[in-house]
Image (cartoon, rainbow, N blue to C red; front, top):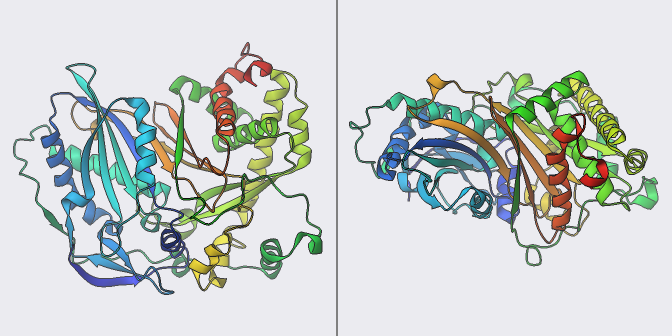
Length: 482
């Protein structure tokens, strides 16, 4: 067991969410995976030593890698420093038969629970495909980490730091020593302050009352609109244990450039277009649904002043309601032209609401409401047996940018994957997006069989794959896409 040392600080009100979900067994990890082509002659033993040699620099660069949570079952959990880290706990190299096995392996990683007690809240799982030639082989380097130590941008920041550390080793790897069993963490380790210590999160009475009514008031009392579709209601874990399913969908570089150009031409973001594609697919697939509710995480770093290359969780969420009128218009489309028009209408609707949210941020922010939560475990327990919090979640961490100079010798970055596991008491499904500079965009759809049927995932996947064809003249008809 790793040796432990000083208490670093209490968890902030956002950070307390994640140990509570871990205690209930409803959320385990975030995974950011970078895929590289490397020389086949690079042996696994040497690879292992390279990654182990990188750990010291990573621990100095990202203090959150040095800590664990103590008292996760209590109302006042704290971050404590691990004095030492067992290397075998944070670096693993495993085989992978072929590319399509990646989703299956990521499912397994997401369903692994973190061991109790003082242990690292992250690990590197390096999956090496069977080489197809004597020249190159493929490495999938997955950072698996607890959400309490980092948001999605943190995983991207880690991979950038990892590249720097590996590249600094250089081509001369003969000087590398055998990997040690343990690595000491810096005694000077300190964590950034939680969000509420960095900025004010004012919550107006009108916003607060609206959220309380939405959360607790019965529909007959407040006369709310028709309920949104969100798959099966939440159930106790004894009836619906966490079992993640993942589907990876890629849009190649040239097709991605088309989507970016068209999004810019229509004055919306790529995230807006992808969100609209989800709404379109659901509206067609679920003709009886009267509303959808989407969740979009976004970072508060621009408000807190925290750099994008720090490992920290400073995320919040924004909700968008897609009403019956919009869904009815989608269902009336009968050709590719109308299909595309309805997509841009939905994208513009999302974009406008997102801009309003960013303009008022951090005032009336959902993170600010956490100040009224005293017991996070009970807060989540009360969600069991109720309608899910939303239909879907879309999270996009953007573009991972590198240069040839930043890559180790003879390494080529192929793509990245950003995934979450199933959420037994969260949204019906999630979509996580990341792209690489000059390369493809990958969308990862996560769901649970006991929550939604796989044919819904098929519909969303098909809509994503169809987007480049739809936005090109002469693409296949909408009827064929359906």
